[in-house]
Image 1 (cartoon, rainbow over the protein chains, first blue to last red):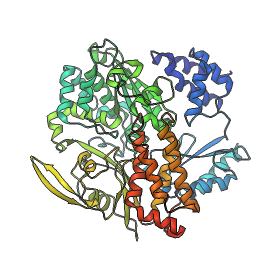
Image 2: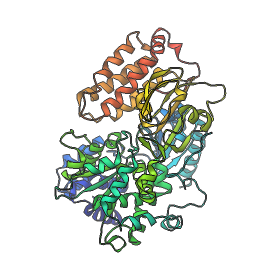
Image 3: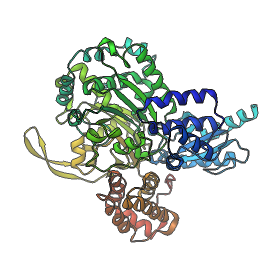
Image 4: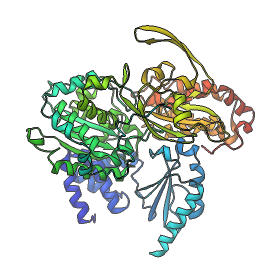
Length: 161
Length: 450
Protein backbone atom coordinates (compact mmCIF):
# COMPACT_ATOMS: atom_id res chain seq x y z
CA UNK A 1 0.00 0.00 0.00
CA UNK A 2 1.37 3.30 -1.08
CA UNK A 3 -0.67 5.87 0.79
CA UNK A 4 0.21 9.55 0.71
CA UNK A 5 1.77 10.91 3.92
CA UNK A 6 -1.23 13.22 4.42
CA UNK A 7 -3.60 10.25 4.25
CA UNK A 8 -1.50 8.29 6.74
CA UNK A 9 -1.55 11.25 9.09
CA UNK A 10 -5.34 11.57 8.84
CA UNK A 11 -5.68 7.85 9.52
CA UNK A 12 -3.60 8.17 12.69
CA UNK A 13 -5.69 11.14 13.78
CA UNK A 14 -9.08 9.53 13.25
CA UNK A 15 -8.55 6.19 15.00
CA UNK A 16 -8.38 7.68 18.54
CA UNK A 17 -11.76 9.37 17.99
CA UNK A 18 -13.32 6.09 18.99
CA UNK A 19 -13.00 3.94 22.10
CA UNK A 20 -13.18 0.87 19.83
CA UNK A 21 -10.87 0.70 16.82
CA UNK A 22 -13.41 -1.04 14.61
CA UNK A 23 -15.48 2.16 14.54
CA UNK A 24 -12.77 3.74 12.41
CA UNK A 25 -13.51 1.30 9.57
CA UNK A 26 -15.76 3.65 7.62
CA UNK A 27 -13.49 6.69 8.03
CA UNK A 28 -10.48 4.62 6.92
CA UNK A 29 -12.34 3.29 3.90
CA UNK A 30 -13.22 6.85 2.90
CA UNK A 31 -9.63 8.03 3.35
CA UNK A 32 -8.13 5.13 1.45
CA UNK A 33 -10.64 5.43 -1.37
CA UNK A 34 -9.96 9.17 -1.68
CA UNK A 35 -6.25 8.39 -1.80
CA UNK A 36 -6.33 5.40 -4.16
CA UNK A 37 -9.52 5.97 -6.13
CA UNK A 38 -11.02 2.63 -5.14
CA UNK A 39 -10.74 -0.13 -2.56
CA UNK A 40 -8.41 -2.89 -3.71
CA UNK A 41 -8.07 -6.33 -2.05
CA UNK A 42 -4.73 -5.08 -0.74
CA UNK A 43 -6.46 -2.04 0.80
CA UNK A 44 -8.99 -4.29 2.51
CA UNK A 45 -6.21 -6.31 4.10
CA UNK A 46 -4.27 -3.20 5.05
CA UNK A 47 -7.26 -1.56 6.78
CA UNK A 48 -8.17 -4.81 8.52
CA UNK A 49 -4.63 -5.17 9.87
CA UNK A 50 -4.58 -1.54 10.94
CA UNK A 51 -7.78 -2.00 12.97
CA UNK A 52 -6.90 -5.50 14.21
CA UNK A 53 -9.79 -7.09 12.32
CA UNK A 54 -10.24 -9.93 9.87
CA UNK A 55 -10.30 -8.80 6.21
CA UNK A 56 -13.89 -10.02 5.91
CA UNK A 57 -14.95 -7.37 8.46
CA UNK A 58 -13.83 -4.73 6.00
CA UNK A 59 -14.88 -6.58 2.86
CA UNK A 60 -18.47 -6.85 4.11
CA UNK A 61 -18.59 -3.06 4.43
CA UNK A 62 -17.21 -2.47 0.95
CA UNK A 63 -19.89 -4.72 -0.53
CA UNK A 64 -22.69 -3.17 1.53
CA UNK A 65 -22.22 0.59 1.35
CA UNK A 66 -22.99 2.02 -2.10
CA UNK A 67 -20.25 4.65 -1.97
CA UNK A 68 -17.34 2.19 -1.83
CA UNK A 69 -16.10 0.71 -5.08
CA UNK A 70 -13.71 -2.07 -5.93
CA UNK A 71 -12.74 -0.78 -9.38
CA UNK A 72 -11.31 2.53 -10.56
CA UNK A 73 -13.72 5.08 -11.99
CA UNK A 74 -13.35 7.86 -14.55
CA UNK A 75 -11.47 11.03 -13.74
CA UNK A 76 -14.77 12.77 -13.03
CA UNK A 77 -17.64 11.19 -11.13
CA UNK A 78 -21.14 12.26 -12.15
CA UNK A 79 -23.97 11.21 -9.84
CA UNK A 80 -27.48 11.95 -11.04
CA UNK A 81 -30.28 11.61 -8.50
CA UNK A 82 -32.88 9.02 -9.53
CA UNK A 83 -35.35 9.24 -6.64
CA UNK A 84 -38.93 10.49 -6.90
CA UNK A 85 -38.66 14.28 -6.53
CA UNK A 86 -35.82 14.48 -9.03
CA UNK A 87 -37.48 12.01 -11.40
CA UNK A 88 -40.68 14.09 -11.32
CA UNK A 89 -38.63 17.03 -12.56
CA UNK A 90 -36.88 15.09 -15.31
CA UNK A 91 -33.78 13.38 -13.89
CA UNK A 92 -34.20 10.39 -16.22
CA UNK A 93 -33.65 12.77 -19.16
CA UNK A 94 -30.74 14.38 -17.29
CA UNK A 95 -29.05 11.02 -16.85
CA UNK A 96 -29.73 10.05 -20.48
CA UNK A 97 -28.17 13.32 -21.65
CA UNK A 98 -24.94 12.66 -19.74
CA UNK A 99 -24.86 9.10 -21.07
CA UNK A 100 -25.27 10.36 -24.62
CA UNK A 101 -22.63 13.07 -24.24
CA UNK A 102 -20.01 10.72 -22.86
CA UNK A 103 -21.00 7.73 -24.94
CA UNK A 104 -21.37 5.53 -21.91
CA UNK A 105 -23.98 3.97 -19.66
CA UNK A 106 -24.75 4.41 -15.97
CA UNK A 107 -22.39 2.41 -13.80
CA UNK A 108 -19.69 2.31 -16.45
CA UNK A 109 -16.53 4.27 -17.22
CA UNK A 110 -16.72 6.24 -20.46
CA UNK A 111 -14.51 4.88 -23.29
CA UNK A 112 -12.12 7.84 -22.95
CA UNK A 113 -11.78 7.19 -19.23
CA UNK A 114 -13.04 10.69 -18.52
CA UNK A 115 -16.22 10.08 -16.53
CA UNK A 116 -18.23 7.53 -14.61
CA UNK A 117 -21.94 8.18 -14.52
CA UNK A 118 -24.07 6.84 -11.70
CA UNK A 119 -27.82 7.04 -11.27
CA UNK A 120 -27.97 7.25 -7.47
CA UNK A 121 -30.68 7.38 -4.82
CA UNK A 122 -31.77 10.58 -3.06
CA UNK A 123 -29.12 13.30 -2.71
CA UNK A 124 -31.31 15.32 -0.30
CA UNK A 125 -31.78 18.46 -2.33
CA UNK A 126 -35.29 17.68 -3.58
CA UNK A 127 -36.40 21.33 -3.67
CA UNK A 128 -33.93 22.14 -6.44
CA UNK A 129 -34.54 19.00 -8.49
CA UNK A 130 -33.14 17.51 -10.59
CA UNK A 131 -29.78 17.52 -8.84
CA UNK A 132 -26.41 16.15 -9.85
CA UNK A 133 -23.16 15.78 -7.94
CA UNK A 134 -20.00 16.13 -9.96
CA UNK A 135 -17.20 14.87 -7.76
CA UNK A 136 -17.93 16.65 -4.45
CA UNK A 137 -19.89 19.53 -5.91
CA UNK A 138 -23.68 19.76 -6.03
CA UNK A 139 -25.38 21.17 -9.12
CA UNK A 140 -29.03 22.15 -8.86
CA UNK A 141 -31.91 22.24 -11.33
CA UNK A 142 -29.97 20.24 -13.88
CA UNK A 143 -32.45 19.59 -16.65
CA UNK A 144 -31.39 18.02 -19.91
CA UNK A 145 -30.20 21.36 -21.35
CA UNK A 146 -28.09 22.17 -18.29
CA UNK A 147 -26.67 18.66 -18.35
CA UNK A 148 -25.50 19.35 -21.89
CA UNK A 149 -23.78 22.57 -20.72
CA UNK A 150 -22.07 20.74 -17.87
CA UNK A 151 -20.96 17.96 -20.19
CA UNK A 152 -19.43 20.48 -22.59
CA UNK A 153 -17.60 22.10 -19.67
CA UNK A 154 -16.24 18.78 -18.42
CA UNK A 155 -15.02 17.89 -21.92
CA UNK A 156 -13.32 21.28 -22.27
CA UNK A 157 -11.60 20.84 -18.91
CA UNK A 158 -10.44 17.38 -19.97
CA UNK A 159 -8.88 18.77 -23.13
CA UNK A 160 -7.24 21.61 -21.21
CA UNK A 161 -5.18 19.09 -19.24
CA UNK B 1 -51.04 33.88 3.51
CA UNK B 2 -49.82 32.35 6.80
CA UNK B 3 -46.58 33.93 7.96
CA UNK B 4 -43.50 31.80 8.29
CA UNK B 5 -41.99 31.71 11.75
CA UNK B 6 -38.32 31.12 11.24
CA UNK B 7 -36.58 29.98 14.39
CA UNK B 8 -34.25 27.27 13.10
CA UNK B 9 -33.96 28.82 9.64
CA UNK B 10 -33.72 32.39 10.95
CA UNK B 11 -30.43 33.05 9.15
CA UNK B 12 -30.66 30.59 6.27
CA UNK B 13 -30.09 32.36 2.95
CA UNK B 14 -29.48 35.66 4.77
CA UNK B 15 -27.06 37.74 2.70
CA UNK B 16 -23.70 38.01 4.42
CA UNK B 17 -24.41 35.26 6.95
CA UNK B 18 -21.40 32.94 7.07
CA UNK B 19 -20.95 29.53 8.68
CA UNK B 20 -18.06 30.71 10.87
CA UNK B 21 -17.90 31.27 14.60
CA UNK B 22 -17.52 35.04 14.45
CA UNK B 23 -20.67 35.48 12.45
CA UNK B 24 -22.60 33.13 14.71
CA UNK B 25 -21.44 35.01 17.80
CA UNK B 26 -22.28 38.38 16.28
CA UNK B 27 -25.83 37.06 16.01
CA UNK B 28 -25.93 36.12 19.69
CA UNK B 29 -24.57 32.60 19.25
CA UNK B 30 -23.35 30.51 22.22
CA UNK B 31 -24.92 32.91 24.76
CA UNK B 32 -27.44 30.15 25.50
CA UNK B 33 -24.69 27.57 26.03
CA UNK B 34 -22.88 29.96 28.38
CA UNK B 35 -26.03 30.21 30.50
CA UNK B 36 -26.89 26.53 30.21
CA UNK B 37 -23.58 25.24 31.57
CA UNK B 38 -24.19 27.24 34.74
CA UNK B 39 -27.53 25.57 35.36
CA UNK B 40 -28.26 22.12 36.74
CA UNK B 41 -28.41 19.50 33.97
CA UNK B 42 -31.74 18.15 35.24
CA UNK B 43 -33.25 21.64 34.94
CA UNK B 44 -32.39 21.64 31.25
CA UNK B 45 -33.99 18.23 30.75
CA UNK B 46 -37.08 19.57 32.51
CA UNK B 47 -37.20 22.51 30.12
CA UNK B 48 -37.15 20.11 27.16
CA UNK B 49 -39.89 18.02 28.78
CA UNK B 50 -42.02 21.09 29.39
CA UNK B 51 -41.49 22.31 25.84
CA UNK B 52 -43.32 19.29 24.41
CA UNK B 53 -40.70 19.05 21.65
CA UNK B 54 -41.24 16.03 19.39
CA UNK B 55 -38.47 14.52 17.29
CA UNK B 56 -38.18 15.91 13.80
CA UNK B 57 -36.60 12.84 12.22
CA UNK B 58 -39.73 10.91 11.43
CA UNK B 59 -41.36 9.23 14.40
CA UNK B 60 -42.25 12.40 16.35
CA UNK B 61 -41.17 10.85 19.65
CA UNK B 62 -41.15 13.34 22.55
CA UNK B 63 -37.57 14.49 23.00
CA UNK B 64 -37.81 15.09 26.78
CA UNK B 65 -39.13 11.57 27.27
CA UNK B 66 -36.18 10.25 25.26
CA UNK B 67 -33.77 12.08 27.57
CA UNK B 68 -35.71 10.70 30.54
CA UNK B 69 -35.26 7.10 29.36
CA UNK B 70 -31.46 7.27 29.42
CA UNK B 71 -30.00 4.78 31.86
CA UNK B 72 -27.96 6.98 34.23
CA UNK B 73 -27.19 4.29 36.79
CA UNK B 74 -25.24 1.90 34.59
CA UNK B 75 -21.90 3.55 35.34
CA UNK B 76 -21.15 3.39 31.61
CA UNK B 77 -20.49 6.51 29.55
CA UNK B 78 -23.48 8.10 27.83
CA UNK B 79 -23.17 8.93 24.14
CA UNK B 80 -25.01 11.34 21.88
CA UNK B 81 -25.27 10.35 18.24
CA UNK B 82 -26.56 13.07 15.97
CA UNK B 83 -28.53 11.63 13.10
CA UNK B 84 -27.43 13.80 10.17
CA UNK B 85 -27.96 10.95 7.72
CA UNK B 86 -30.75 12.91 6.03
CA UNK B 87 -31.92 10.28 3.55
CA UNK B 88 -35.71 10.16 3.48
CA UNK B 89 -36.67 11.06 -0.09
CA UNK B 90 -38.33 14.47 -0.14
CA UNK B 91 -36.40 15.75 2.89
CA UNK B 92 -33.70 18.39 2.60
CA UNK B 93 -33.76 20.57 5.72
CA UNK B 94 -30.66 19.40 7.58
CA UNK B 95 -28.57 20.15 4.49
CA UNK B 96 -29.11 23.89 4.97
CA UNK B 97 -28.50 23.86 8.73
CA UNK B 98 -25.24 21.96 8.28
CA UNK B 99 -23.96 24.01 5.35
CA UNK B 100 -25.08 27.47 6.40
CA UNK B 101 -25.47 27.48 10.18
CA UNK B 102 -23.36 24.65 11.63
CA UNK B 103 -22.76 26.40 14.95
CA UNK B 104 -26.47 26.44 15.71
CA UNK B 105 -26.33 22.64 15.56
CA UNK B 106 -23.15 22.52 17.64
CA UNK B 107 -24.67 24.73 20.32
CA UNK B 108 -27.73 22.45 20.44
CA UNK B 109 -25.42 19.45 20.70
CA UNK B 110 -23.36 20.95 23.51
CA UNK B 111 -26.47 21.90 25.52
CA UNK B 112 -27.94 18.42 25.03
CA UNK B 113 -24.62 16.83 26.01
CA UNK B 114 -24.30 18.94 29.14
CA UNK B 115 -27.90 18.20 30.14
CA UNK B 116 -27.33 14.47 29.76
CA UNK B 117 -23.74 14.27 31.02
CA UNK B 118 -22.46 13.14 27.65
CA UNK B 119 -18.69 13.22 27.17
CA UNK B 120 -18.55 12.28 23.48
CA UNK B 121 -20.94 13.14 20.68
CA UNK B 122 -20.75 11.82 17.13
CA UNK B 123 -22.37 13.54 14.19
CA UNK B 124 -23.24 10.79 11.73
CA UNK B 125 -23.46 12.71 8.47
CA UNK B 126 -24.55 11.09 5.23
CA UNK B 127 -21.72 10.31 2.83
CA UNK B 128 -23.23 12.46 0.09
CA UNK B 129 -22.51 15.62 2.12
CA UNK B 130 -18.69 15.75 1.78
CA UNK B 131 -18.67 19.54 1.95
CA UNK B 132 -21.05 19.50 4.93
CA UNK B 133 -18.66 17.18 6.76
CA UNK B 134 -15.77 19.60 6.15
CA UNK B 135 -17.84 22.58 7.31
CA UNK B 136 -18.76 20.74 10.50
CA UNK B 137 -15.11 19.73 11.12
CA UNK B 138 -14.06 23.34 10.77
CA UNK B 139 -16.88 24.56 13.03
CA UNK B 140 -15.95 22.00 15.70
CA UNK B 141 -12.30 23.13 15.55
CA UNK B 142 -13.41 26.76 15.95
CA UNK B 143 -15.70 25.90 18.87
CA UNK B 144 -12.93 23.89 20.52
CA UNK B 145 -10.42 26.71 20.10
CA UNK B 146 -12.91 29.11 21.71
CA UNK B 147 -13.42 26.70 24.59
CA UNK B 148 -17.07 26.07 23.64
CA UNK B 149 -16.44 22.36 23.17
CA UNK B 150 -13.66 19.98 24.19
CA UNK B 151 -12.00 20.01 27.61
CA UNK B 152 -13.24 22.23 30.45
CA UNK B 153 -16.04 23.96 28.51
CA UNK B 154 -16.14 27.68 29.45
CA UNK B 155 -14.20 26.99 32.59
CA UNK B 156 -16.90 24.85 34.17
CA UNK B 157 -14.89 21.65 34.44
CA UNK B 158 -17.31 19.93 32.07
CA UNK B 159 -15.67 18.32 29.02
CA UNK B 160 -17.20 16.98 25.84
CA UNK B 161 -15.74 16.14 22.44
CA UNK B 162 -17.71 16.25 19.19
CA UNK B 163 -16.62 14.15 16.22
CA UNK B 164 -17.86 13.94 12.65
CA UNK B 165 -18.47 10.45 11.28
CA UNK B 166 -19.26 10.04 7.60
CA UNK B 167 -21.72 7.47 6.30
CA UNK B 168 -21.39 5.90 2.88
CA UNK B 169 -24.69 6.07 1.07
CA UNK B 170 -26.96 3.65 2.92
CA UNK B 171 -30.52 4.83 3.75
CA UNK B 172 -30.87 2.24 6.51
CA UNK B 173 -28.29 4.17 8.58
CA UNK B 174 -31.06 6.68 9.27
CA UNK B 175 -32.68 3.98 11.42
CA UNK B 176 -31.22 4.64 14.85
CA UNK B 177 -30.03 1.14 15.71
CA UNK B 178 -28.73 0.63 12.17
CA UNK B 179 -26.89 3.89 12.59
CA UNK B 180 -25.35 2.64 15.83
CA UNK B 181 -24.19 -0.60 14.18
CA UNK B 182 -22.70 1.48 11.39
CA UNK B 183 -20.90 3.67 13.94
CA UNK B 184 -19.43 0.51 15.42
CA UNK B 185 -17.90 -0.29 12.05
CA UNK B 186 -20.34 -3.01 11.06
CA UNK B 187 -22.99 -3.48 8.44
CA UNK B 188 -25.93 -1.34 9.53
CA UNK B 189 -28.32 -4.14 10.34
CA UNK B 190 -30.91 -2.70 12.75
CA UNK B 191 -31.06 -4.25 16.21
CA UNK B 192 -34.02 -5.87 17.88
CA UNK B 193 -35.90 -3.77 20.47
CA UNK B 194 -36.10 -4.99 23.19
CA UNK B 195 -33.45 -5.37 24.44
CA UNK B 196 -31.44 -2.94 22.33
CA UNK B 197 -33.15 0.33 23.14
CA UNK B 198 -30.43 2.92 22.52
CA UNK B 199 -31.22 4.65 25.82
CA UNK B 200 -30.04 1.52 27.62
CA UNK B 201 -27.94 -0.57 25.23
CA UNK B 202 -26.82 1.72 22.41
CA UNK B 203 -23.41 2.56 21.04
CA UNK B 204 -20.82 0.10 22.46
CA UNK B 205 -23.68 -1.28 24.59
CA UNK B 206 -23.75 2.03 26.47
CA UNK B 207 -26.73 4.35 27.00
CA UNK B 208 -27.07 6.45 23.87
CA UNK B 209 -29.25 9.33 22.72
CA UNK B 210 -29.92 9.51 19.00
CA UNK B 211 -31.45 12.78 17.81
CA UNK B 212 -32.16 14.43 14.50
CA UNK B 213 -30.28 17.60 13.50
CA UNK B 214 -33.37 19.81 13.52
CA UNK B 215 -34.45 18.44 16.91
CA UNK B 216 -31.13 19.38 18.50
CA UNK B 217 -31.36 22.90 17.07
CA UNK B 218 -34.76 23.19 18.75
CA UNK B 219 -33.16 22.18 22.07
CA UNK B 220 -30.92 25.23 21.79
CA UNK B 221 -33.93 27.52 21.37
CA UNK B 222 -35.79 25.81 24.20
CA UNK B 223 -32.83 26.42 26.52
CA UNK B 224 -32.83 30.05 25.38
CA UNK B 225 -36.48 30.93 25.94
CA UNK B 226 -37.54 28.22 28.41
CA UNK B 227 -39.72 25.17 27.90
CA UNK B 228 -42.87 26.95 29.03
CA UNK B 229 -42.53 29.73 26.47
CA UNK B 230 -41.58 27.29 23.72
CA UNK B 231 -44.63 25.14 24.41
CA UNK B 232 -46.82 28.09 23.48
CA UNK B 233 -45.42 28.08 19.95
CA UNK B 234 -47.39 25.79 17.66
CA UNK B 235 -50.42 23.85 18.89
CA UNK B 236 -50.99 21.59 21.93
CA UNK B 237 -49.04 18.29 21.70
CA UNK B 238 -47.51 19.63 18.44
CA UNK B 239 -45.32 22.40 19.75
CA UNK B 240 -42.67 24.56 18.16
CA UNK B 241 -41.96 25.17 14.53
CA UNK B 242 -41.39 22.70 11.78
CA UNK B 243 -39.51 22.93 8.52
CA UNK B 244 -41.54 21.68 5.59
CA UNK B 245 -39.57 20.65 2.55
CA UNK B 246 -41.76 20.86 -0.52
CA UNK B 247 -40.66 19.24 -3.76
CA UNK B 248 -42.18 18.04 -7.01
CA UNK B 249 -44.90 19.75 -8.98
CA UNK B 250 -45.50 23.13 -7.33
CA UNK B 251 -44.50 26.53 -8.64
CA UNK B 252 -42.24 27.37 -5.71
CA UNK B 253 -40.66 24.27 -4.19
CA UNK B 254 -38.39 24.85 -1.21
CA UNK B 255 -38.18 24.90 2.59
CA UNK B 256 -40.64 26.77 4.74
CA UNK B 257 -40.73 26.99 8.53
CA UNK B 258 -44.10 27.33 10.25
CA UNK B 259 -45.54 26.86 13.69
CA UNK B 260 -46.68 23.25 13.86
CA UNK B 261 -50.39 22.89 13.13
CA UNK B 262 -50.85 26.55 12.23
CA UNK B 263 -50.90 25.89 8.50
CA UNK B 264 -52.97 23.51 6.42
CA UNK B 265 -51.68 21.43 3.54
CA UNK B 266 -53.82 23.52 1.17
CA UNK B 267 -52.29 26.80 2.40
CA UNK B 268 -48.80 25.34 2.15
CA UNK B 269 -49.23 24.14 -1.42
CA UNK B 270 -51.49 26.82 -2.88
CA UNK B 271 -50.44 29.98 -1.09
CA UNK B 272 -46.89 29.41 0.09
CA UNK B 273 -45.72 27.29 -2.85
CA UNK B 274 -47.80 29.07 -5.48
CA UNK B 275 -50.10 26.21 -6.45
CA UNK B 276 -49.75 23.78 -9.34
CA UNK B 277 -47.72 24.52 -12.47
CA UNK B 278 -49.57 26.39 -15.23
CA UNK B 279 -52.26 24.28 -16.84
CA UNK B 280 -51.89 21.51 -14.27
CA UNK B 281 -53.90 20.22 -11.33
CA UNK B 282 -52.66 18.53 -8.19
CA UNK B 283 -53.27 14.79 -8.16
CA UNK B 284 -51.52 13.35 -5.12
CA UNK B 285 -49.37 14.42 -2.19
CA UNK B 286 -46.99 12.45 0.00
CA UNK B 287 -46.94 14.51 3.19
CA UNK B 288 -43.98 13.26 5.26
CA UNK B 289 -41.20 11.72 3.20
CA UNK B 290 -41.61 8.97 0.61
CA UNK B 291 -42.57 6.30 3.13
CA UNK B 292 -45.64 8.25 4.32
CA UNK B 293 -48.95 7.08 2.88
CA UNK B 294 -50.02 9.02 -0.18
CA UNK B 295 -53.01 11.41 -0.10
CA UNK B 296 -55.32 11.63 -3.10
CA UNK B 297 -56.75 14.97 -4.12
CA UNK B 298 -60.52 14.80 -3.74
CA UNK B 299 -60.66 12.24 -0.94
CA UNK B 300 -62.41 13.15 2.34
CA UNK B 301 -61.34 12.37 5.88
CA UNK B 302 -64.05 12.19 8.51
CA UNK B 303 -64.06 11.45 12.19
CA UNK B 304 -63.91 12.97 15.65
CA UNK B 305 -60.95 14.82 17.09
CA UNK B 306 -60.11 16.47 20.36
CA UNK B 307 -60.08 20.25 20.41
CA UNK B 308 -59.24 21.52 23.88
CA UNK B 309 -61.27 19.20 26.07
CA UNK B 310 -64.09 18.57 23.61
CA UNK B 311 -64.52 16.00 20.89
CA UNK B 312 -65.61 17.61 17.65
CA UNK B 313 -66.44 16.22 14.20
CA UNK B 314 -64.13 16.89 11.31
CA UNK B 315 -64.70 16.49 7.59
CA UNK B 316 -61.59 17.45 5.65
CA UNK B 317 -60.41 17.43 2.10
CA UNK B 318 -56.66 17.12 1.70
CA UNK B 319 -56.33 20.92 1.57
CA UNK B 320 -57.89 21.22 5.05
CA UNK B 321 -55.42 18.96 6.88
CA UNK B 322 -53.46 20.86 9.56
CA UNK B 323 -49.76 20.07 9.12
CA UNK B 324 -49.08 18.61 12.54
CA UNK B 325 -48.07 15.18 13.82
CA UNK B 326 -51.46 14.20 15.24
CA UNK B 327 -53.70 15.34 12.37
CA UNK B 328 -51.62 13.58 9.74
CA UNK B 329 -51.60 10.41 11.85
CA UNK B 330 -55.36 10.69 12.34
CA UNK B 331 -56.06 10.72 8.61
CA UNK B 332 -53.90 7.63 8.13
CA UNK B 333 -50.58 9.06 7.01
CA UNK B 334 -47.79 10.79 8.93
CA UNK B 335 -45.87 14.02 9.34
CA UNK B 336 -42.68 11.95 9.22
CA UNK B 337 -39.64 13.96 8.27
CA UNK B 338 -41.58 16.97 6.92
CA UNK B 339 -40.84 16.16 3.28
CA UNK B 340 -43.88 16.98 1.14
CA UNK B 341 -43.76 15.51 -2.38
CA UNK B 342 -46.36 16.83 -4.79
CA UNK B 343 -47.51 15.13 -7.98
CA UNK B 344 -49.76 16.73 -10.57
CA UNK B 345 -51.99 15.24 -13.25
CA UNK B 346 -49.03 14.60 -15.56
CA UNK B 347 -47.99 11.69 -13.37
CA UNK B 348 -48.89 8.04 -13.68
CA UNK B 349 -49.32 6.67 -10.18
CA UNK B 350 -48.17 3.22 -11.29
CA UNK B 351 -44.91 4.74 -12.47
CA UNK B 352 -44.54 6.90 -9.34
CA UNK B 353 -44.90 3.76 -7.24
CA UNK B 354 -42.41 2.03 -9.51
CA UNK B 355 -39.92 4.78 -8.70
CA UNK B 356 -40.51 4.52 -4.96
CA UNK B 357 -40.32 0.72 -5.02
CA UNK B 358 -36.97 0.85 -6.80
CA UNK B 359 -35.67 3.06 -3.98
CA UNK B 360 -36.76 0.71 -1.21
CA UNK B 361 -35.54 -2.39 -3.03
CA UNK B 362 -32.14 -0.72 -3.34
CA UNK B 363 -32.06 0.33 0.31
CA UNK B 364 -33.39 -2.75 2.12
CA UNK B 365 -30.49 -3.96 4.27
CA UNK B 366 -31.39 -7.59 3.62
CA UNK B 367 -31.51 -8.73 7.20
CA UNK B 368 -35.20 -9.76 7.39
CA UNK B 369 -36.60 -12.03 4.68
CA UNK B 370 -40.01 -10.36 4.21
CA UNK B 371 -38.38 -7.00 3.50
CA UNK B 372 -35.37 -8.25 1.52
CA UNK B 373 -37.52 -10.37 -0.80
CA UNK B 374 -40.75 -8.36 -0.68
CA UNK B 375 -39.22 -4.99 -1.50
CA UNK B 376 -37.55 -6.53 -4.55
CA UNK B 377 -40.74 -8.28 -5.67
CA UNK B 378 -42.68 -5.02 -5.41
CA UNK B 379 -40.03 -3.30 -7.51
CA UNK B 380 -40.12 -6.07 -10.10
CA UNK B 381 -43.92 -6.09 -10.31
CA UNK B 382 -44.19 -2.34 -10.83
CA UNK B 383 -41.28 -2.39 -13.30
CA UNK B 384 -42.99 -5.16 -15.28
CA UNK B 385 -46.21 -3.13 -15.31
CA UNK B 386 -44.38 -0.08 -16.61
CA UNK B 387 -42.58 -2.09 -19.26
CA UNK B 388 -45.79 -3.18 -20.89
CA UNK B 389 -46.76 -6.43 -19.18
CA UNK B 390 -49.24 -5.23 -16.56
CA UNK B 391 -51.90 -7.69 -15.44
CA UNK B 392 -55.33 -7.04 -13.96
CA UNK B 393 -54.38 -8.76 -10.71
CA UNK B 394 -51.17 -6.76 -10.13
CA UNK B 395 -52.77 -4.32 -7.69
CA UNK B 396 -53.95 -7.17 -5.48
CA UNK B 397 -50.60 -8.93 -5.82
CA UNK B 398 -48.70 -5.81 -4.78
CA UNK B 399 -50.97 -5.32 -1.79
CA UNK B 400 -50.53 -8.93 -0.76
CA UNK B 401 -46.73 -8.62 -0.81
CA UNK B 402 -46.81 -5.31 1.08
CA UNK B 403 -49.19 -6.72 3.71
CA UNK B 404 -46.73 -9.53 4.37
CA UNK B 405 -43.84 -7.15 5.01
CA UNK B 406 -45.40 -4.58 7.36
CA UNK B 407 -45.18 -5.70 10.98
CA UNK B 408 -42.90 -8.65 10.19
CA UNK B 409 -39.48 -7.02 10.29
CA UNK B 410 -36.98 -5.97 12.92
CA UNK B 411 -37.13 -2.28 12.10
CA UNK B 412 -39.60 0.24 10.69
CA UNK B 413 -38.15 -0.06 7.18
CA UNK B 414 -40.69 -2.84 6.66
CA UNK B 415 -43.52 -0.37 7.15
CA UNK B 416 -41.65 2.34 5.26
CA UNK B 417 -41.49 0.20 2.13
CA UNK B 418 -44.98 -1.32 2.51
CA UNK B 419 -46.93 1.89 3.11
CA UNK B 420 -46.39 3.46 -0.32
CA UNK B 421 -47.55 0.29 -2.09
CA UNK B 422 -50.51 -0.24 0.25
CA UNK B 423 -51.70 3.35 -0.09
CA UNK B 424 -51.08 3.76 -3.84
CA UNK B 425 -52.98 0.55 -4.62
CA UNK B 426 -55.80 1.40 -2.22
CA UNK B 427 -56.29 4.96 -3.39
CA UNK B 428 -55.46 4.66 -7.07
CA UNK B 429 -56.73 1.11 -7.68
CA UNK B 430 -58.68 2.34 -10.69
CA UNK B 431 -55.46 3.56 -12.26
CA UNK B 432 -53.68 0.27 -11.66
CA UNK B 433 -56.56 -1.55 -13.34
CA UNK B 434 -56.66 0.86 -16.28
CA UNK B 435 -52.92 0.45 -16.68
CA UNK B 436 -53.37 -3.31 -17.09
CA UNK B 437 -56.08 -2.84 -19.69
CA UNK B 438 -54.36 -0.18 -21.72
CA UNK B 439 -50.71 0.76 -21.50
CA UNK B 440 -51.68 4.22 -22.77
CA UNK B 441 -53.47 4.80 -19.48
CA UNK B 442 -50.30 6.59 -18.53
CA UNK B 443 -50.75 10.36 -19.19
CA UNK B 444 -49.25 11.27 -22.59
CA UNK B 445 -46.60 13.67 -21.24
CA UNK B 446 -45.85 11.78 -18.05
CA UNK B 447 -42.28 12.22 -16.74
CA UNK B 448 -40.15 9.09 -16.95
CA UNK B 449 -40.01 7.71 -13.43
CA UNK B 450 -38.88 4.12 -13.90
